[in-house]
Image 1: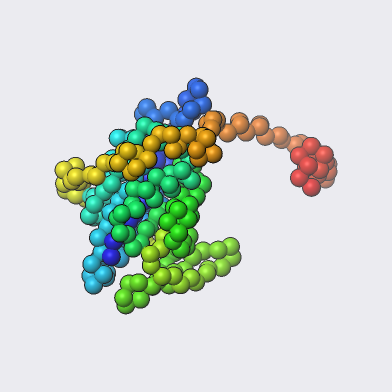
Image 2 (image 1 turned 135 degrees about the vertical axis):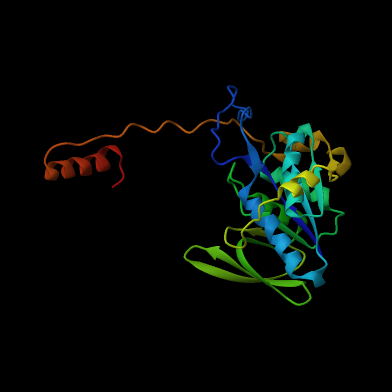
Length: 266
């Protein structure tokens, strides 16, 4: 079985994010980048499947799209235990959204012969959760999102998964090839060992640009894809709080008036 895991390089969750003066993106100087936590779940899920199901003869590839510096996330995947890594790197892909990104990945893996794609439910930077479903549509594959448990058939061609929905869990049966996006709870990611990280620096990464995928920068112009990343802006500053004083009954009346007339919450 050939398994593809999608990994993304994102700012660390505790990083202080600053917007560039022209609104074209975030300032990256001094920001530590790491593997998206939900991508860690995807890689770990693939690794545990391989370790627990030797008969499946699983072979795991990690793929990322981004600038040259984002190769570090593939080194982390190597240190965790994946077998191969693919890096799609091209300046023309700087400002594409996740729908266009799905087209790029579909082109990159069209001849890969993958049986299963595992991705994180979403990335903690843009938090859209669009990439997995969009890639499944590009491939015409079935997709199940927010997976928290799975049970494989003996031939590894069918799988029963559990996913979170509002107020309950849903059980879905699917047949490979398929794409799953995984949620917190399916697995607990391992920490890459220091020797593993050192060895990962010497592992080969298959780097591809758009030309190698049979694509060009023109394929990702606004006219061609219809959408592109717009302006980045910080959230508006939170208004200062208000403090009421006086008798409790009077404060309650004033609070109701504020909520009804000013905030219009009731």
